[in-house]
Length: 204
Image (cartoon, rainbow, N blue to C red; front, side, top):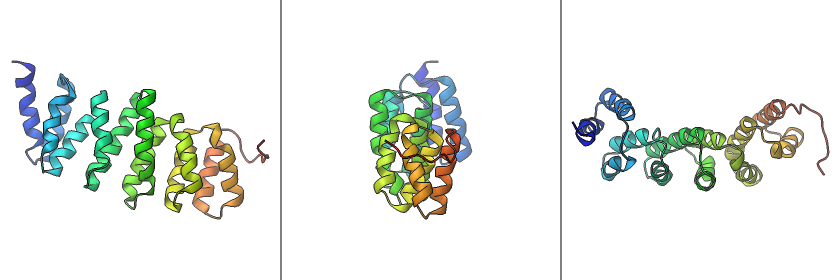
């Protein structure tokens, strides 16, 4: 049996409307190994958001540049659940490792989502940015300075998890000047993680 003949029933299962069958199909597709993520791309033309969700769910675990490009594009989809799935997939890709240019593209696409009213999407974007790590820090610091209160909180949580020393002055400022208890909490978490503690200093 050819690879196409093996994969076709699995692709059909994604469209069946049965979550258990679709999850099994994803597992089997990943185990069989796709010749290219491109075999999934025609399914993204479907008007069925559930099918597109399952395709993105699969692409989230296929660590290939074309899969990442599709996930980035899906961050602009009209359906909230599609954007959420894309952000989750990008987190998986970031954990696997991104090229410098890919990381920059992902940061640029994900950072604005920290301002989303959909807080699940915002938190998934935060997780993806955290997984990207150091390359995301400059954009996160900019958001911490100029973002909405909700975006600033997500940003501080990401910075605390990343533990990059470039965030230390902003964390000290949050602890000493900000009246938002949650923001102060995550700033303190970040400082503690970096072993700075509450040793106050005046940055040069």
